[in-house]
Amino acid sequence: MHYQPKHDLLAHHIVLVTGAGDGIGREAALTYARFGAQLILLGRTESKLQAVQAEIAAQGGMPASIITLDLLHVTPEQCQQMATELMSKVPRLDGVLHNAGLLGELMPMAELPLATWNDVMQVNVNATFMLTQALLPLLLKSNSGSLIFTSSSVGRTGRAQWGAYAVSKFATEGMMQVLADEYKTHNLRVNCINPGGTRTQMRASAFPDEDKNKLKTPADIMPLYLYLMGGDSRRKTGISFDAQPGRKPGAAE
Ligand code: NDP
Image 1 (cartoon, protein in one colour):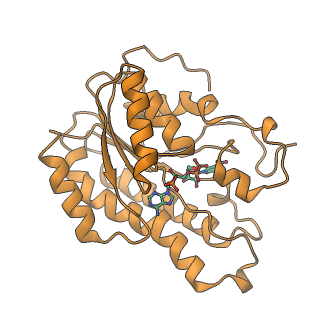
Image 2 (cartoon, protein in one colour):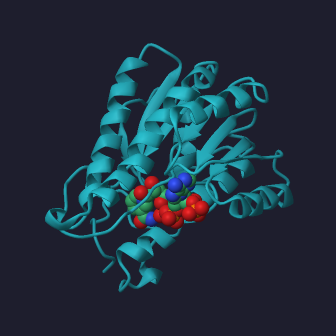
């Protein structure tokens, strides 16, 4: 995407990113902070979140805060408690990027253990749903809120072996569409990003034999992440965007 954001695109924006400690989420948090946002970094591994927090401070960004939450075991009550605590610290949320994700195991559906299925659904779908319910009141306090879900090409067309992960991303697309329709008369836009093959740990587990130098880095795909988080996308809702339009799904060639 060719997008030239203004340097202060996200000034006065308060943005929460899940899975902010690594991969695409880490890059998105650092990028949003560089464009002026105040970040809330949510993730599982506190040390990784602290490293991102320190990096934001070192690049001169607004002080970021940390919420450590393991989405594999999170309950609705914990999400509500987290949101209540957040309400005492910030007046609103202008953006939420649901980015945390679990790949699970790639294998034929006939062999997929129920435990793997449940874990993937818990992190990618149930926790995303619980967090969204808890955070909606804060998002609706913004005069231009942006709720972004992270999809995948296998969330649009199923692929052999991608079992629970693919189904969870179809569910993510559905969650986005339902919410976009429910909030179409509010100041809240709801969209999906399909990052496309991107150089991260998750990608390396899915395609261990691929030449990772042929993949875009998380930094390369940030223009779309910025566009959807900032005011230039104000009128866009209910859309599933590709961060790498035209890229063929599957291994890098
Ligand atoms: P990574 O595995 O590099 O990062 C995933 C992030 O999610 C990490 O910060 C991880 O935390 C966090 N996370 C995982 N499980 C939990 C949990 N139980 N609780 C809290 N946080 C958790 O993945 P990517 O950056 O590649 O993926 C980011 C998103 O993009 C995912 O939703 C993925 O499905 C999607 N995607 C990625 C593509 C790619 O090619 N990379 C392609 C298409 C979609 P920790 O570091 O602590 O483990």
